[in-house]
Length: 482
Image (cartoon, rainbow, N blue to C red):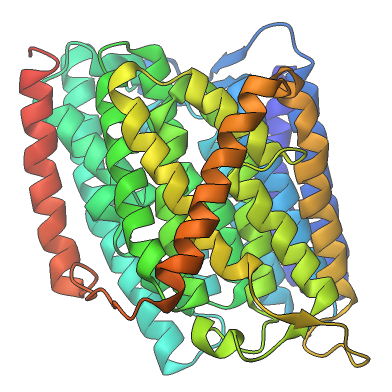
């Protein structure tokens, strides 16, 4: 079993290299790699106990693969599979597919890491691959957005690395459990790096511009899987160390509210989706015990929505309200919007019910407000005009293949928590959705409020890192008593 895990980690990097040697096979090799990852995730679900590997004693690689890893790996596999299908006939070069698969492999590695140095390597590789995909169009705008992402990411990971050294200094081990008993500076520095990489709270305000300005398939990869490489270690630490759990939950609630506040007033469809990525990541952190299932559901939904946004006639909601979209595209858009809003029959419903049942009392009101804001935001898509058109423009066979994978996954994932389907659980989400739709139609549809982009400027991003670092240091002293 250990050999299978090691071979599975190495396989995408080998394929990425082979793609350069055999560029005509780029799509087929990429597709096969995603399918292998999906198979490995299902294999993990069938294992009776977690797989633990200690490859280099205290000095390095400690791996742990369990059902939590399985949910994140399956998300990575399905999103990558959908993006490859979407790009099938778009003329992307072998370079694009090679970087996508290297990104896929590095994110997979992050999902099984159980020590801070191995995780650092995985996050750095994924950051470089993501930068190359963001800058793929080679326009001045895309290169600037990519460099901005890379610079913020590198600063955050420098803080993270110093924190990892402090953990080793305290315990002579880089294991996640080493946070217990380490100085508060270690917690603050490591968590700052992970919060920035994961797009959490104000330290994640780099995310809206990066995700909205990238090409649609790259946006799907970034929102669907890349940010989760920063989320996964936070969830893992909260499960390993009980004293970390309140800190992770706090940032989950704060992130859910911040993201949804911006999303409700956003007039640009891709920026609205990006802000909702911030918000939905908050839901993952708000209930770490069930974060894996929510991460799977969010990855499928958000990837589908970004791919759909790429074929809409405009990004501006005001313009879309006067340009009917094709009914078939609208149906896919509505199904994804229903799922993220928590509508029954799609896995978003089960994920929200399961998350709600695992909240602690102080979180409940705030997360209900975030759920209401989600319903308001996605009413913008649901109530768009549509009509059946003879000529289907801007979409291609690959688009529908991707939709089958992603929306089919949302339907199939219902089996994870079918116990959610009882009258009490169904009534509350439906009431929240109805109230959100009503608020949108009566108030927010006609709102002209446009929030300033404060906090998204490059200087502000670095400044917010300092503020979050101070907050984390205080938490380390006050909440952990160290």
